[in-house]
Length: 179
Length: 386
Image (tube, rainbow over all chains, first blue to last red; front, side):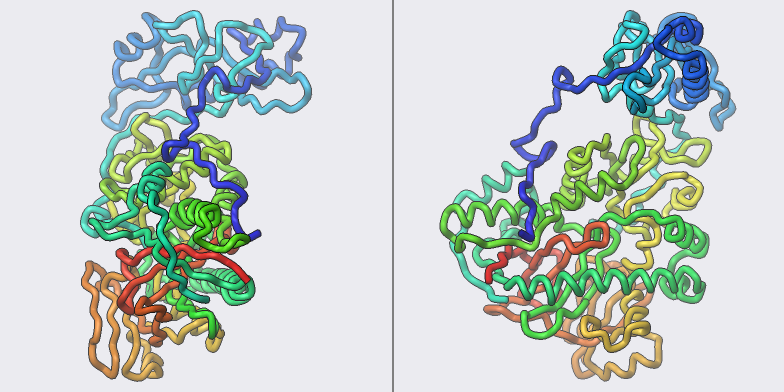
């Protein structure tokens, strides 16, 4: 047969299947408030704790949400819960980001884990739960736990845009790009 | 290859809307036209189209190999000098290509002749992959076409599998220009395939892309764009304000920058120079090449960057017979031997063959009443039946 067996669409058209969070698959992950809590957990070796913590800490300044004012950051994450990012805006002003409140790593149960080691945050309006840098809910539990798979993906790098609108001029002048 | 008139499904417009096919008509004229279909034999598909299109892709790769090592060629193709190194690097580093459409003049009798290769921003994808497939299912079910028909169309499966194998880590961003309904339809469709391939996706307009202090591209949520599917021509990207950021942005583009060599009609002249006499190629030359005299005084004249048939001119016996308007041409022209599109019941048919990850993946037939296919050419479905 020279044609596709089926042509299901998930986003376009009336047949759209809404992906619901309650139906989302969960995976094993380990969540800790700090390095010591991980080291104290007999499920994970000290080596694994340290490697994952170091990775999460390094990623923190890259993936954490960024703000131009401390007040805006604290409005989202709470008083005294924000710090300066280790770089400045091109205008010279400081950039703020929430403090790292914990970290997540693979559980190491059953061999290789797809969970990416990453920092976790707590937002002011939902302070019981850990959230990823992409604002995905991880839950309040620490230790080896079940986490929605979408929350275990590699967090995106957050930046501060300094300029927009540098693409599109030819499109406006010429019309469609289609060929 | 036969053209067979057939009854339309009475409810096709409603079906189109249901399936998210919003550009099925241009003004009030149908763009999707199921008042006829083309019937091909399996031999025609496999020997005359599928094999040649994959062979042409391989020949095109030889053209890329040659072009990246030759500054004179890059300059003839009007690729801006600051991008020469970047174009070469994306090829040498194996940046993957997703898709392309090769347009042929084919009538079922002689070999298919390559007219152009839409290597960078082809559209017509959704209707080829989905709506044509749905038409065939319903047309067989309702007895409009014989049972047991097949179709040259594994686009939906191949796009998903190619995207799954791209090795994309993190989010795949999609961008097209504002207010371009058909472009957006193509982007939405490929995004749908990407989601089904397990990728995280986000769509934005080209105009909304930002640049951060490190020269990286950003979306409207301040995420750094690491992989970008852009339905926006490379020759535009390279000359716009943010273009200078591309080589150091760290963003992987789909299609990759080396496709700028193949989406350029100068490539047709290079193909002919390297593979002269190949049965699927038409003699083609850069306009200022003295060898172009070999074409005599009847030929097609095509701007290097033209799209939608814009600015293409047909010269017969030294006289301009058809000349399409448009904004292209400043960049120079190629001249190509005249090979008329096959005529069926007063219509001129062009056969577009799809490549996904460089493998033959499907086909669309477009019909027009004139010799130069433009963006208002109608889409006619096809079947394979021996």
